[in-house]
Length: 489
Ligand code: BGP
Image 1 (tube, rainbow, N blue to C red):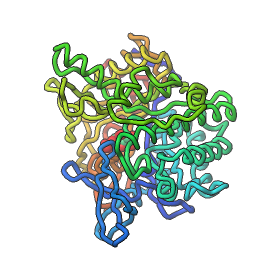
Image 2: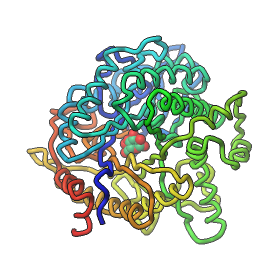
Image 3: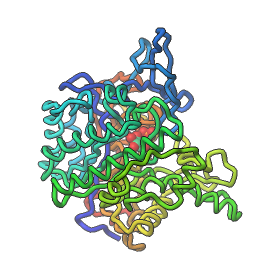
Image 4: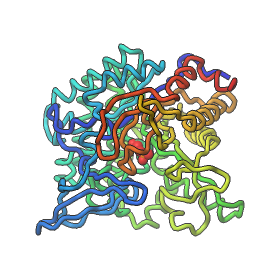
């Protein structure tokens, strides 16, 4: 069992989880800057001030975001820690970080561009040259080191000024600003970047941090996402016109869902649960809403603000490939409180969990890759996968991360079986967080994914020294042998 030489192996990051440098190079604030740290017990929050001066914090953990109260303005509060401001200081370590990745033999690097580094408020007519130059440095160095850049245009964040003035993706006007941003990227990086992702985890975004909306109710959410669909379709069309040969995807958080029992009602509930998230990628991959959307809007009390021409816009920019994150699987049963919501479900008694309670299910990756291939008949790319674990580094910064090796080995084998035995056209894999970075859901550093250890704790203390973990050399060998070594272990 061996993958072809042109299979793309790499790592994936997001700007606000690794860059830092929030006030350098003319960067404007981005919505995640206002997110505090947290942990498994205490959710992250967006801190805000009310017109009468009172302060508060709204839970911001991704899909489970709470609304900001009417009149609340996000702000920084004394005594709180905001991990994105410094993150792991990739802004000053990017050369070293890229060299370490290339040292493993990686031939692709997925990273996101911070919108507010390029358009600090989101409203400027012209891009910020220092922002473009920063990313050009990364792209050029990737190419020099033999890694294709894979760019996420919008990784769950907006310039704060734009979020405040327009209520983020609630407004149709945001689409125009997004397209001006896309155009600036295509103009500058066309010819150097072939693979683009218009949005990250489109089925998991909700609320202020990821959509820039103060509300997070269904009506706000589904209308905001409708605007994102339109923005994506127009970006794909524009990208194809400006950069012939370019390939566009959107990242879809693809947890497997299993019926909790073989009771027909549970199996049916599982199908309905799957549709909650297929809704997003069905629309973007096929260029039109699925038939079940009507009933979903009715059930959720959504009044979709259609405008003339929307149908044609969606149809004109379907995705070229489908990219997924895969971390875990869940089970669902009829009557489950989250049976009709995109995220949430129960664990699985047949599977072990990570320390963060995420079920470890390698076969689930093979399952979802097949599901994806059957449903869309488009090339697939696994752009996130990995294991958040507690790493104990010795005095030299070395970590014996056998648990990570085991997790990845089992997932790689299932991915290879999907490709080589089931015939799935999956052309790449980028592991999440190849060097340790800030966790999105909890804001911790303690939840580490990397092949490379970064000496920093949950509050930003540490030398920021980068050291190779045991998994680094293991991964290098996997890439060298195109996965063949996995079958000899
Ligand atoms: C995805 C996001 C990433 C990322 C990853 C791991 O949802 O696209 O930004 O962080 O999940 O999640 P976490 O950091 O919460 O462990």
